[in-house]
Length: 135
Ligand code: NI
Image (cartoon, rainbow, N blue to C red; front, top):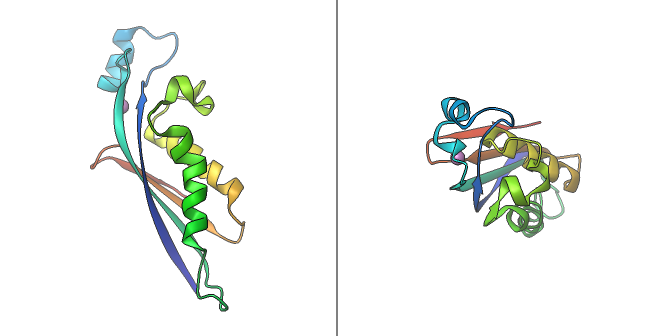
């Protein structure tokens, strides 16, 4: 029997969206306030979904404590209260848009979770703006 289980998580992080080599004015035209050279923060809300089959022995899809710890190690510990551009290696050469952050998170979780699960990452950058990435 297949179903999807979800775990919510949260992190605060700073970023700047910009393209190297563009003037500040051009970056502002494209990225707006998110191009502020002095950075700014967002409250990111993360919802990780795992789809798979229930283990008939336990009735679990996955032990949620295990999923919670993986999200903490792969996302919350490295991203929370960090400047994504400066302090997170994945974004040294990758614009930390909500799209790219979701893909980075998905790739990190994919390495940690059994391939029998399908993974979805829903990431809110603001209460109204979010992406969903499923690989
Ligand atoms: Ni921003």
